[in-house]
Length: 259
Image (tube, rainbow, N blue to C red):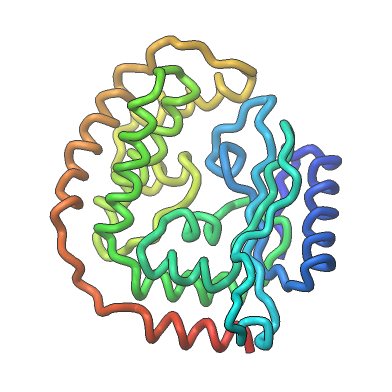
């Protein structure tokens, strides 16, 4: 599958496609999932946003049967426009089992350079079955708090607002642990007030035409929304696990996908 919006620079997409083909050939790996991460996939790009391609790769079964495992990350040269790197399947599965929301987000990215839908669906089903909501909630709360600790700016505020929106989405979907990736969807699929959604839409529109957002304050309605969601999410910090350990299920899925 492939899902590339018209807003992406065709030359940039061509370069990313080339890097993915080169990685597959030079490292002798299969890349069943390659997506955009970062502000473009999160729904609030700037005119000068770089391209953050993330991919999952799979080696042959024989290469996993070794006493000296290979490095579980493949990186391509980093520059001011492109940040393209990927994780090995075992790394992705173990992190999902621990409730790492980063890998789960890649599986839900709205921008797909190349992908095997069946592979994606298997990993999403695995995540839905084993991921602890509390672990995901803690992840997003900590991301927001970390960003709040930095020098305030409107650009940084987006990296606080999106985790807060993910926390609201989790609160509104008590039977799910895999939230959408992009900010507009998180808000539209939650009970966030209309003034919150409107203010976020206006701020996204401003960012889309502004290369460097200043240090001005975010709209008060959004600051109140963030504060409320972070306070409510503090409850995740003391929640105990409620699901069985996922190791056996992760092993079974790994063997099946590699085979």
